Image 1 (tube, rainbow, N blue to C red):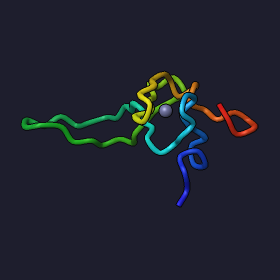
Image 2 (tube, protein in one colour):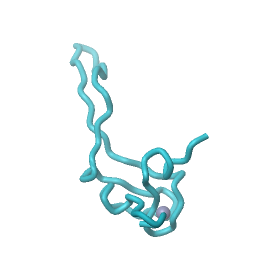
Image 3 (spheres, rainbow, N blue to C red):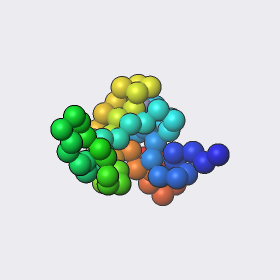
Length: 72
Ligand SMILES: [Zn+2]
């Protein structure tokens, strides 16, 4: 199984773990009379809000990006 660090190149810059990260995504939904239906792909970018639920550090994806050398 791949890690978040391996798949997305992200880890928490504060506590260094990568298995409790959250990212705010945008999606497109079709509107119905009784609700919504997601129809698009999840989209997020380096400017998206990103956080760690382990240490509760929140910033943007940029700050969570692992730089060359293996640490943010
Ligand atoms: Zn953290």
